Amino acid sequence: MTATILLLEDDIQLSDTVKQFLELKGYAVEVAYDGLQAEEIVYEKHIDLMLLDVKVPHVSGFDFLKSVRAEGKETPAIFITSLNAVEDVEKGFALGCDDYIRKPFALKELLVRVESLLKRNFGTHEVQVDLGEGLFFDLKELTLTKNEERIPLKTKELKLLSLFLRHQNELVNYDTINEALWEYNEEPSAGSLRTYIKTLRAALGKEHIETIKNIGYRFVK
Figure (cartoon, rainbow, N blue to C red):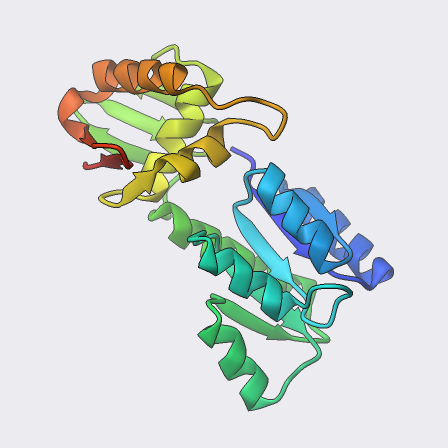
């Protein structure tokens, strides 16, 4: 599975360098040169991790993350900035960042921190998640198998299972699910979602997906 990274950086040369480096490492990168562009991207697309400069036009990286966290989004975030005072670092973490890298930085160090956060976000360092009773979900290939035989699932069903595995034992509300499953030009469908849930319950066991009435679902392993 390809993780999608939002890169908010107004230095075009640095942005291009980081983008090319991360894409060579197998990641998809969405680029924003100012805070307003970043807001549009997180609204329209599913993002797995955010790399945020602070001093960018229109909406600063600090204000952008504050807004994202206020909406309840827990997407991992790393500040990459020339602001190196202790007060700036404290502010970054207070606003909800997961890591803070001072410029200039080595691309290899950035990669280590990105990979560490993405692994933590999935709750596992393994490519395959053991779901018990011969069931395995491959995080890289986005496939579900039972006793080494592939279980045919639709793309949105696989995305939904991936989302649940990133938030095991947590309430996942409808807004989060809709953002993960449907593109900005698609209309979320409650009926389709119920069908996806029914299919996953048939494959995994209905006891693994709890319905939280009028709010969302919780995956319990």
